Image (cartoon, rainbow, N blue to C red; front, side):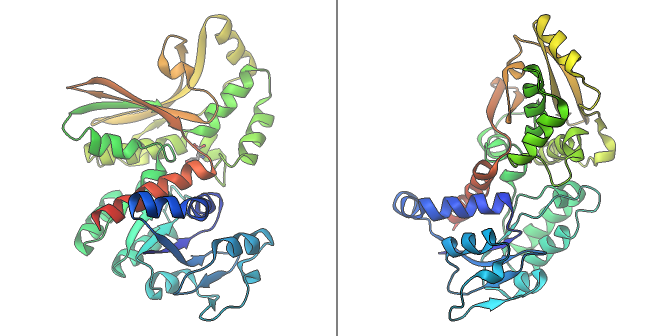
Length: 339
Ligand code: HSE
């Protein structure tokens, strides 16, 4: 049984918990996989640790009432441990980092990540911040610690972007990755096409759980740039920082721009592009014949340009609760397989 510590219990970690709640029998029967949540630490909604496992239903009941403190008293339950203590002293095998992304410092999550590896725990991330700031340090640390560092959920939610790029296509030379890597902006552009205002479309994207805690990261293009940077580091071992990217968001695109593009048989999309030499994120007006022009709502896509296969395009969810939770599950299954 893989024991899990959840750092952060927002949308994404809840998405994973929900999958574990409903699919554990199937995962055990088909894949021999079983996982148990032993720890949940949040910044403002309490924390719980129970070495024999927490009951997922009860976690949801408690969090829906506002705080994990509502969890019932049971034997062996510890309450109120701070996040660092949870990472260092809990008996978890895997730390799942799912707190909000900070693209400037990566903190406080970056410290949590190093602490998890120091404590001999595998690290699975939904948070892009630490990878954007310190990808190579974290990879080196994980290698030295002999633990796995996995981050499928950080790029295109659970769509297996990292897996395909680094594992399935490992024998290819990839010269470029180009795609739509932000669900919120793609959702906004889609809704504007049917006449919805920018502000209303953004509010909907927030309600659906697509947007970052601070949605300016989405609309200004930095979330897509962060994902492109992670992808470039994983594919090309590139040393780029966000400052090396040329980034432009969608805030300058008007309802009129969107609708007049449509009358010309075109669509505006926020396109991210990385090569070993650099990266960019910018709105591009694509002809409808371009496959990326037909990726709508919170769906994302990436095209890998390769030597052996030519273009390989992956299209799938780019945001969402269970979609991103699934990305975490995919990483846990890899850890289980490596056993
Ligand atoms: N805010 C992100 C998006 C969520 O809209 O794509 C997934 O990383």
